[in-house]
Length: 234
Image (tube, rainbow, N blue to C red; front, side, top):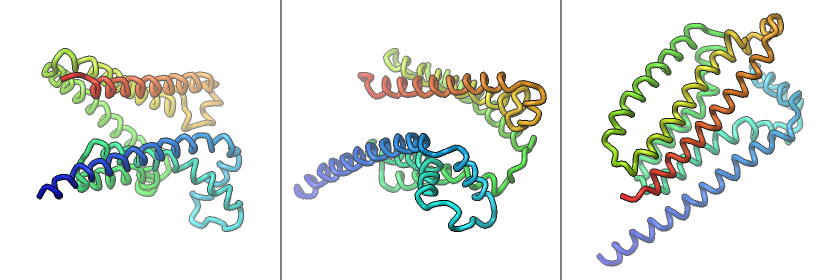
């Protein structure tokens, strides 16, 4: 009985070490993915992606190393994010069955970039983006409604962490709104001919810079919030 009990902590230590290794490998893989984009010419990337949207990909048009770099740049970071998520679940000592379930959901989310165009097509759709926008709006309203109730239940030491996370979510909500303005009116990024015709390209670039700032700040606030949650003394 004592041998069984002593083996449990050993297994937990091994799992935690494996999770740390996987976390580090995933983080390095994501950084390498981003850096690899510096070595891919935009013209080659555009040509490869245009071929991938066709029913038949002509074998031999591109060197395998080129295709490998394009595949790494296109899918490396999303896959790294899923692996990072899984390794974090392992570090939190979650049950293996729950980890597999959530990792499966993560892989489904990863595949949406391929599934959504197949299901809904590659044409612009007012209904698709309109319905999605209202779902986002409703979810934001609900999130802040329940966040207020959640914040009331916290002790004073835990409230700063919740506040930082809420600031992060606020940035993501603002980014979602400006993505709409960037892509459709008045930025018209989805309609480049109209963008050039109206001369709004500088406005669209400014919108995209603001969107980048919202994402940067959103993730910084979120990271600070989780850091404070993890270090708060109960």
